[in-house]
Image (cartoon, rainbow, N blue to C red; front, side):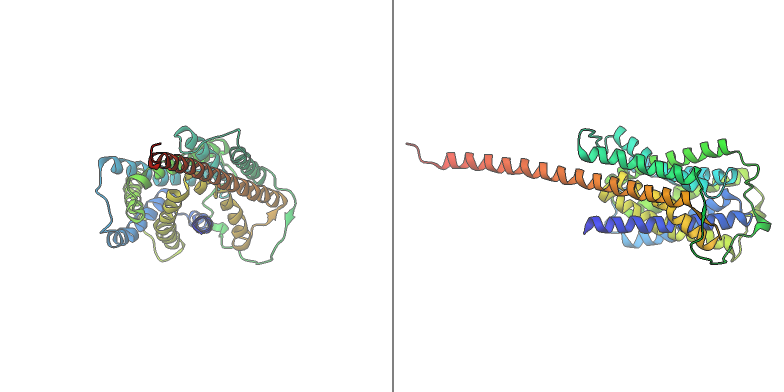
Length: 355
């Protein structure tokens, strides 16, 4: 039941993150500066989470140490400030959907980092180890197929909904620097993978999900505001009304950063960083469906084939993770059984009367 909760939670996480991608597209299309968007996102998240964490965990919160404070600082930097600014910079240089496709590199990067930091065992000789490697490569292959191969258009539903306004298109795709945009997207994925590793350590040192996420958002807010003020000092650009810009920062801040990061922290503590990152391939599938439904973007054959490979890879990785945990539990049970038999034999030998 615990494993089912984690799976459902991570699927919800990807659905919410897909909504963030849609709101990002709409806000950038409206002309909002990406750095200001990120700054407002974490300001909203901090304002929402700080009182919640204070009241819910005021009795169970452990003592803050310098080690935890430094971990939270780097967690906010890699998981918030750096990854999100690189992500939106890649959108400006390439297209709105390209960085979403590149996020499928996060599971493989997290897998490699988890092996380096000994959070995961490779175990090439075992079935579970080979399943993890094969599933990761399959998901990455499906993402690359979805990205670079379009194929024929497939009309699923004629919604006639097109939320993007071409008159205020802030993303110039005609003169994009795809090389630099690709590098920025890869760096964003690497930053997110590093965040998964740091979050694993935070969950052990400071096991209060609301408080740690509130501190993460606070650090990211301070860093993002400082960076945005350095590059954008025109205060008129910081004004937002009750429009798509406000909806974008409120949704991404309160829902995505405030609630969903807390859920991700819980999943990482329960199942590890590889399990949580393995669900990122779902993001591109959901974004493709929402873009087709809300932004009048047509699905193509490459999207369908790539999505199928992504789902197969995700299933294989989760199966390998489950098989490895089952084998570990079986081994531990056998060792415990041998120890009990050994102790029982010694007790029986000592309790026998001398001849």
